[in-house]
Image (cartoon, rainbow over all chains, first blue to last red; front, side):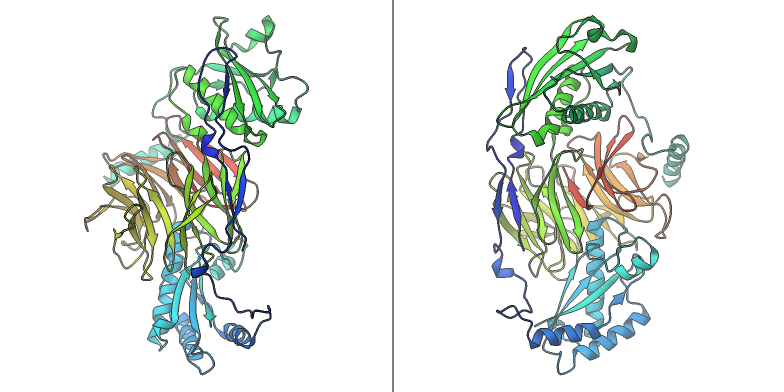
Length: 181
Length: 423
């Protein structure tokens, strides 16, 4: 990730006032140019895990995760809702069974809550979180250890479908399960 | 009360059929009629001259304090009799400018305000800005001062910096500092998901934002002068800095340390975190009101998003809005509250989201927009101007509502979709 932060000294673009003719009213300038600083690695203690080996190859664990994730169902929600419908509960039960099998029970589970494009983004992030939380609670009720699960919301930032129609919005109101080693 | 609100809304809806004018509260008796004249030398690029003219013209229009002649007029800087008076236009004022570039990249604008009735020069000044790409701020400054000279209510908000996040791809967004017209834009954070930027102080030299680059969302504070950033706090689930107290020492955060989104107050000095709201559903978007002793926020505790208030330190929650079935974003200034409301319960409809203004002291309610998807309203540091996000089918724009003039303006973003704004 490249994080670019730029020192602008924008706040210094303040003009002083004077009404006399031909008085030069230059703006105060603190720094002449806009600086760029690279902040990569500022948050090493909290950095994301990766599935890649040191040599960059994808190892057996990553391959297992990829295979498992492809078998896990996404959980979809009704417009503006975060309760689990009965048909989605069936899918969560199946997910729980899969995630408690021998080859998957040692992985942590990250549930990502997502929303459609409707509504204000701050509310949508909370709505996505409630969706993720609902799935977490349902998974634990089907026997998944809650200590294996973390949840996060991506609001409307992670659409599965980018068109603006009902079929698309239906796909975007969802929770996705990711596995972490 | 509801009946009273409905009557007001019906009146507003009947009187105004388009977005720009909803309700006129008060207006100046007579706006001075003003024309702009470009007196710039031929050695300055014509496109640049016209861009400068366009922004300055737009500023005077958005001020809503002038009757502005649209025509692009030119003259010599000193002007002949006809150039000085343009009698066929029956003007009150002529704003004449001449711009030039310096070798070091600075832009200089020589400006005079001619009183057509008296033939006198009311004001003459030279303005300078260090970088050419910052010229919109030069135009805004000129407009602010011309507005002051005619004695109109302040439009200093035009000089403020807007900070916003825009989505550019899935889980990817950038944070940008701009002027209110988006004519100047500078990306200050990019790479990954970086959202909810919020100015940390009135000087606008520091801002907060949330980064999703780590396992948990992290709130950072960035000094725009040095480019240095500092981690403030992290939270599982979500993390948003929704408001900063007037003394700039306390933050209202929406965060979910236990998977449950509630509103917390974080003290920058003591680093103490205090939970303000507690509800098993959704509480978001806290905003300080009444000398920072109270907050308004959005909650779904009635089964749909609506606006509530709560004194800090109290458990008692008061419903603030009795209109609408989905009021999902709120901003406050002193005793005024602006919120966006979805007009229909379904996800379809022509009048999708509109902005409304209420007062905590009266039953006053005012509809500010009547068409389209209008979200994320934010007051300027006066109670007369509100910025918001306007969404079109595949585009978004910054919207500006001028309350006293009952006018709304839109400034489209060409690339990306605006996620959140602050100014």
